[in-house]
Length: 152
Image (tube, helix red, strand yellow):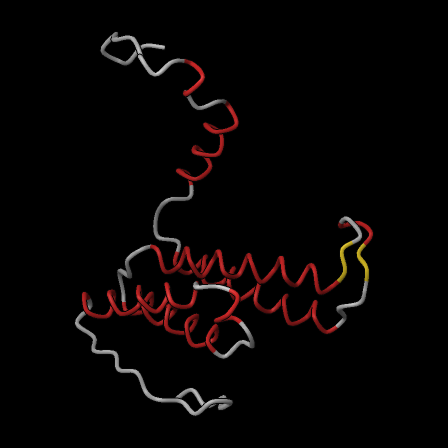
């Protein structure tokens, strides 16, 4: 392989990305841009599916590898975390983006065991504080009593 300037690539062919890699990069590149709303909606959908699947956790889904509802709920929970992370990753361009991050953070910290399972909520919290400062918004944390579901 040569570069655009005709220089040989010294890295060797085994280090070059293969077709699967390039296809993955092309798909990712096509999704770049302002996706805050999309990521938020996919987070909401995945989070709702967690709750619905857990309601019938013993049900087996033969068409999906014989997994039961609890296992599929865990997959939905992992996907919800992924979309929460994707929402947190991009700097908020508008107040609405920051509001979405705050909503995700507040929802995640009230989910049973979420803080023990993952650091995603902590990453969303850090991102929302950085975004708030850049947008000129002052966020303050209020103490919440253990076991409380009160959010404000």
